[in-house]
Image (tube, rainbow, N blue to C red; front, side):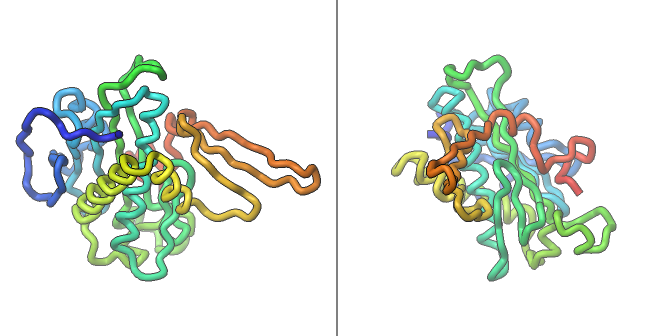
Length: 257
């Protein structure tokens, strides 16, 4: 179970977001770093703390989790976060808008990357130890601030350019929280396979491939090799990919442009 209701009461800094229990919102100023702040307060604030930054050009937030499993298994909570992020976008999208995930961490709208997710855990925790906390961080570009004419770079985009004209960053954060709880409920009732199925359905389809997520979060890609009459299995490491998010620009501290 990737999220527990905190045992101790906490007072939110702001009532602005309409969040389901057990979430408690902590708002940062516009220049704040939600991911870094959530990591810094994770031990003190506990599960359900949702840190977000009030910006118009980015939906930026981070959620504190308290896993019950060893780190090697608990890291799969990242997939629940990515499912919630993609489903939150889909809930606000115009009809026929394509919302896809580029494994493991980038989210694309109509084939243009708008942002993605990150995951952090305490340093020094071994794979067979249960970490006291995890932090899932999400970021979505709502408005492009580069000054580049829309469409010139089809590999990146912003929500405003894809028809999300009436969606504020706070709406996406609220929607993420609701969809994350749905993912957690599905995990509890049917096991992690329910989360994996929803996640894998967001990956771009490729003929002749079957994808699965291993117990440690690695992606298993199975290819039918007709000429050899066998199935080849390729393992892609989640841990290796989480160390350097594909969508994040560490200099600009936002989605890559």
